[in-house]
Image (cartoon, one colour):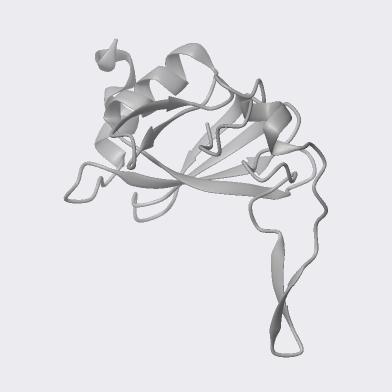
Length: 136
């Protein structure tokens, strides 16, 4: 299956750990949802299935977004930046993207010299993960 994506894989500059940062953005609204890492296998699986798959550095394995929480990401467009060292995934996000139960992981903003929460919890994480604090 890798042959089918040889051109895109050749365009990606994976780091010394075999990873590349991937930014997930909601298609249509442009909302930045999260950043995670992908390896070659995650890229190929994502392009093959249309369901976003990342590489979990903490678990040292593939992380299929939403496999625990049901909050999957469906790939709508796959982009590689000018240097080939960052990916932009335009996705349709089912529910929330962040393991904290917020729509996006970027829920804190610097305001008047302090970090302020600017996005409310939409879904209780214990409902998403059954008490397991690990993000999926």
